[in-house]
Length: 117
Image 1 (cartoon, rainbow, N blue to C red):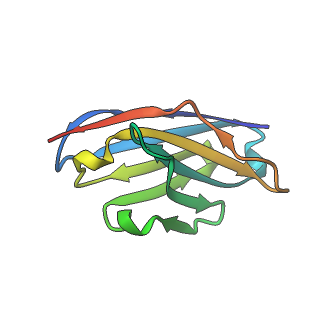
Image 2 (cartoon, one colour):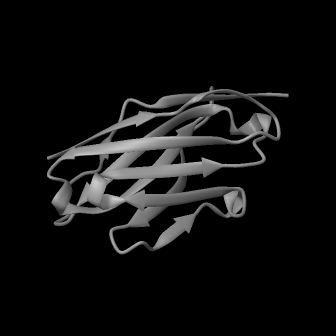
């Protein structure tokens, strides 16, 4: 099974940037894709972006252009570069990974991003 751990969250001013990292461990050779979700206080969890082992990236429509997902799978890492941050980006960001074969997604514990206006 794959395990994932996020890092890189913090407090940033509106308009600033932040890069989140996610490190995978375990059966990393079996990862099909990795991605990010976020959940703001009082709101439902929201999908942010996904990147496949082949490097195909997809984004939530509302975030395209500000957020960039990337990977370094040989080193079991995935990143989310967030630019032009807004107060509404404040949320806990979760890394997910899914293995080939239809296994359930593995979730990290989350990292908090707070954008001050």
